[in-house]
Length: 371
Image (tube, rainbow, N blue to C red; front, side, top):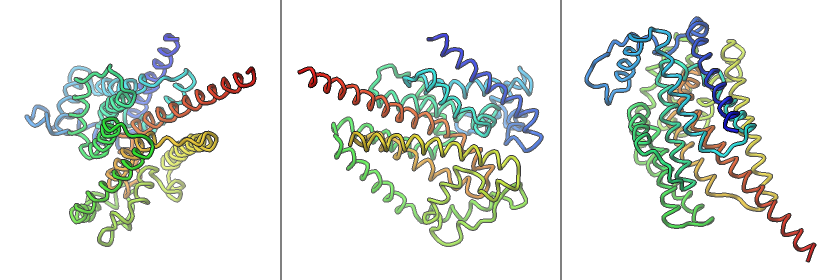
């Protein structure tokens, strides 16, 4: 069994390495690969602020690797870093070979793999978000095998690269701690979820003016003559950043609109990928819904775990992706692996509990029949 799993992981790592070469020698001819070239050139190499400035850190590490490995193979450590992040999280799931292949298939889409298989902040993000995902799963399962040093490094990198994600992650950790410390049951966990929404809306209300001002600054960072940037029609009036958040969160996750998908081949491929991802999520949710109907048991705990972190991350992500589909997909790759692995863990846990429920019912029926 271990040999088979190793073969699956070897194949997955090989696919990601393939994407590295594809990105460098094919995709780079179609569009700019973010800041990969400047990281390898290292204009800020050696500056003393590398320990708290993500760009300087990338310049220092990537340029150092380029000096020893060359401009192509310098990307390889970033590939391995992102693969390890996925592996660290996924190995905590109790999956069959078929389930593992499905999960890794969802994590092998070009729009995700291209940006995370080169010298990029996205590759680093997949690593630290993967470790944080594994830590969260360990907490949910009350596992004692936590690697606190690695987890501390992951949170440190998250604070440097994506500090806005820590809002949702912290909310989730507070929910898990409170739920376990107070020994809450169904209604208690539902009440705690309600408290999360009240607290979140309260925080947004208190910071509404600052967030509103930032929303009018963001469009200045997107040039209309640069690629696929859309005209700003989303933040025109005061507090549009809140009123238009549901649409903005959706379009920032999907990337191109349907109309944009038919104007550019790469947009069409990304739109189709996003469609497949959403369909996969919907199918899984429908299965859970049918289980709830059959058993009459809705697991508030699992729902709360996913909502508390994903809603916050989608909200802080959407200003960076609402005006440009390319930026939306690129930045989505930072948390896409986190979403997929966490959701897949909760989904398979739900299926496992359902199978145990059905097995118990069958045993009880057989016992009653024999009696």
